[in-house]
Image 1 (tube, rainbow, N blue to C red):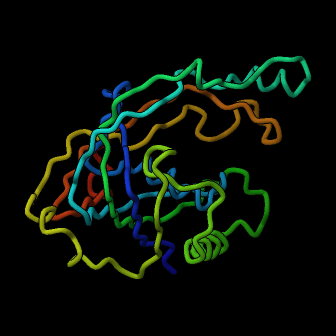
Image 2 (cartoon, rainbow, N blue to C red; image 1 turned 120 degrees about the vertical axis):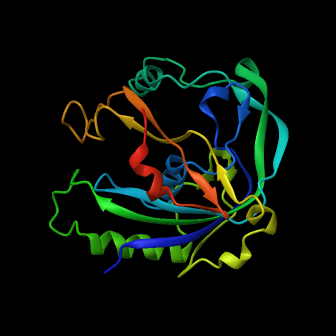
Length: 242
């Protein structure tokens, strides 16, 4: 039995931020595997599985638009939240009027992607005997068919939600834009593949009820080509670089 899936993802805007331009955001030309993994985790996620992106199809022309957005400069402090829960009077809130910063961003508009992916078992937090591939496959398939998710899937940034996710049997490559096809073989340069945390997804204190995770992480890059609108992620996965 195959545990792979193919989905069509559409959105009005998307931003897959280049790390070297994170102050004034500039998007990659195409989605990163890590961004798509995060999107899929919004549909269904458990420590017992991990998603692997195999192919990305870029159907619509790669068009950018410049916008200005209000962002907050600060993050909610975990310690402030804990103190608030203990009734110690700490204020965990961020007040946008005091922390607002206006930034420019060059984002993608009117995007449509085909994503082929599969999942693998990690063995993490899998005490139950029914933690099988069949079980996860059926849950993912049902949630994709019904359009279910536990948080809004987004295209790189939370303010760019996915407009539609459709589970398909196969991709209709004839719907790839002539503008994309005319590009031929495009070297996309070094792109973020994933951020790998030192803890491997396991609590460093060994306690799943009150977990503490490591903040140490390494960004892994790969150098894919988009050929006729198709990015064969699996083909370039073996040449990843830290």
